[in-house]
Image (cartoon, rainbow, N blue to C red):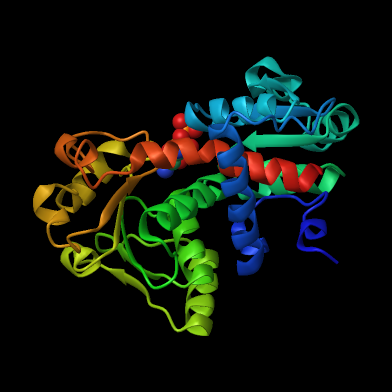
Length: 312
Ligand code: CP
Ligand code: NVA
């Protein structure tokens, strides 16, 4: 069976469900679709398909990258927030899921619990794509891996330092590093840690690939000689204890001094949106090592790859 057939009809809920060779294959398809886009070659081979998009949290990149990708592939998207749906009046997910399944060819959903995307997937035959939950952000992970590959030539063999809250993006990077052969250092203040389910997965997979999976309180240990420095917000969508988080993470800012401890050819990444002056300084985000807008662009190419593979 060709690799392509592995994907048809599959959900995309977390990269923990995908093998390294499957992730590499998605990145190859994304590279090809990016080339087609740059060369202005038509790739609208999924005409007459319709995609439901339900977003329970704000979004700029994910919403627009998906909607533009869907249009480029010849499909149509239908976007709604739960407040405009009967979900807001108590209609259960299991009923919503079965109705959307009858109309659309896939669901792209951004919500809170991973259990919610799993419930949609359980009640839908059509593919469900996770556009961010509290636990994971697999679409971001794919764009990040494509960006690292483009800028560093290879994914494996790099050291990635993550600084920010132990939340969806942190988890996704831990998963990606452990599957694709990167050393992963996560700098966190005392008492803060990633979700156990991700920690266990990442530790097991790092062991298999003989790479490092380190949680450290020392920002210096994390960033020292890193090839990739990845910052993220100290408070994510849905967090209420913002002041407590800002205080706890205050000394974990990526600025010119911190980035100087990484390798001289290190790249700087951030999933965006960022808070200049909190986790990151303007000088780093606008600096020569920053690849944040390439990352943002790659969201569209990698999402196009996922859609074309699960729907082909
Ligand atoms: N990085 C990312 O997912 O951005 P949005 O929240 O704007 O979609
Ligand atoms: N950690 C962030 C990611 C935003 C794309 C959040 O969930 O708010």
